[in-house]
Length: 281
Image 1 (cartoon, one colour):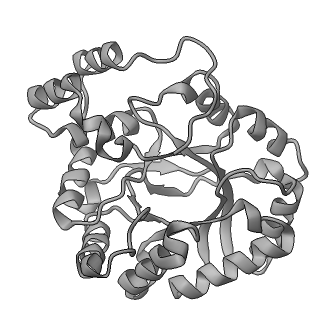
Image 2 (tube, one colour):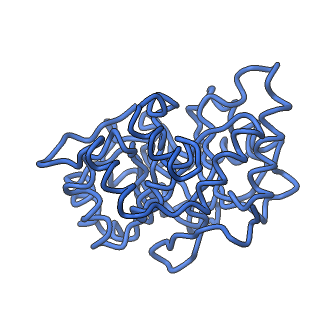
C-alpha cells in the first residue's frame, strides 16, 4: 500500500484530490484515545489519504483541534475540509466561524469550506461569506453538504453560485437515493460528490451479502463497501480512530469490483426506482 497508487477525483477546477480521505466525526472527544487518533490521522496521510474532513460541529471544535495537533507539520500534504454550522451561516457569521476553525486547525487557510446543511439564512448570505473568505485567501474552494438537487439548482442559479465545488452527502450501499437525481445533476454540473458515512458508521458491515462478496474477493466488508463508493466516481471520507482501521480502509484503493460482485451488491442493495428525499445522519 503506497501513496503513489491512490485513486484521485477531479474538482471542478481540474485539481485532483484523493478519492479516499479521512473523516473525523466523533474524534477528539475522548482524551484516552487521543494519541491513537493522532497516530491514525498521520498514518492515513502516509498512505495517501490526504483529504481530511472535519467541522466546527464535531465535538464543538474538538475534532478540529485534534487535526490541528496531528497534522500541523504536514499542512502542505493535505487537502483540508471543514464546515460552518447553518446557524452561523450569514455573511459575517460564516467569516467569523471560518476564522475560529482556522485557529483550532492551526492553519491560515482551508482548501474547501462547506455549509454543513441548509438552515434559516438565505444561501445568498452564506455565499457572500464564502466570497469574502476567498478574496482574503482564507479558503481556496467552497461547497455545501446535505443539499438535495432542488437546493443545488437554486444555489447554482445565484450570482457566482455555479462556483460550488462539492456537495458532501450521506451515500453508501444502503443509502443510494442520490443516484436517481442528485448524483446525475452533480455529474452534469461538474460538481464533486463526496460521501460521508460510506460504511454507515459500521452498521452496513453486518450484512450477509456484503460479507459473501468480500470473502470471494479476499477483502473485508469495509473494503468492498468503500471500493463500491469509489467505483461510482464519488469521494469517500470514512472515519477511523485507529491505525489498524486506517490500513484496512486504505486497502479499498487497490480493490476493483468485478461485474459479478457489482451485480450481487445491486441485488442485495437495490438502486432507487424513483425520487427519494435526501437522507442525513
